[in-house]
Length: 412
Length: 107
Ligand code: FES
Image (cartoon, rainbow over all chains, first blue to last red):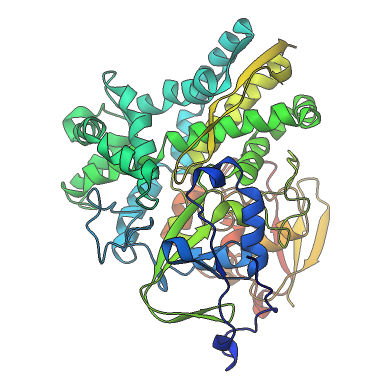
């Protein structure tokens, strides 16, 4: 199944296109794969800089260098034809396309600038105290409990206690938020059972989200109201604002939940790293970042080629879908020392867990803030974190995380 | 390759070689300069690669973009007139010998 490939010649070499692109018959959207993707990631990386996945008729990159290069060349690898398997040039998207995720420059530039300002480092400074206080309260509550599910009671409960308020959402209906995000991320996948089921059950979640994106439903001072305020400045139109709010609702919660879940899962499995973190809580931010690198809550995204292109000497036609394995790139031994180790002191700069380039996660600062303050609050109160029951995996076409992680904390 | 000197908060200078077309942030993280974090990997989004450019060099750098200017308002250490994001400083032969002072914190 794994073809041998010689080191590819750089693009421009006339012999470049003569080496065939290795084909693999793995399905990276199957339950078997989701249960343990890492061995397949290695096969994908070692097969060559670009591979073909016969099952879905797409190309894929899994090495750090190529994933990074594709992410940073939006002219050649566009997003407007969808960042899932579905090609918007040939199929109708399941919802109106995102004005930011599924857009290219110059259209993307203006909407991105709006979100950059709404979620800027200066704004994050202002919400920091509020997010810290909520994390401290949550940590107190969990230490008092002792034993609980680290996914529902911590990884979900903490972001749910801060993010919807920061956005300015009404109290009613928030239970739709996580199902909606899970739908969005399943929908990036192929037409498999996960995707079909998610879309079939989507109507109430879609209706809720659509309503919450309207100006009159968003509390003053929140991220949502700030987006709508840019209509008055003439930066975006009144029709665009709700769709930009929708981006925060789609991408701002489930990803953080899986990021926090990943951090707790790592710290429970690597007790010496927890010890290190306890001894130096200033590492909390990096401990979260390293969990995002190692576990990559967002595993994959697609791009579509806008022209004939060479990737590391291999020729692709125009209009091809290219699947980027962010998770495999984040563990590529060509880029990382001991890539499968969780190391809270690692220099993580450059990992692609939040993407890279113009589409890099616009909410990364909020996610890091949530991760940092929650882990910091735990280091001050908790001596050990032990996994005390069966760990259940979450199955989603794009997200990687857990559905259940029973833990017991011993107080410091 | 142009060389670059970082001055640590305690006044200790550290000179390093930069790679072709590398940013000052990338050179710093590659050499393990602790005071540069670079959380966004050089995508001008995080403001954790903040530096103070030495007075003698400040006018020789390309102008600040609007994006960089907005990000500099959110730096952890105080913004000064010589503040820049080191991921937006691309090392060229003209910048050989550049001196950048490191702030005491980035987050
Ligand atoms: S590295 Fe993030 S702004 Fe420079």
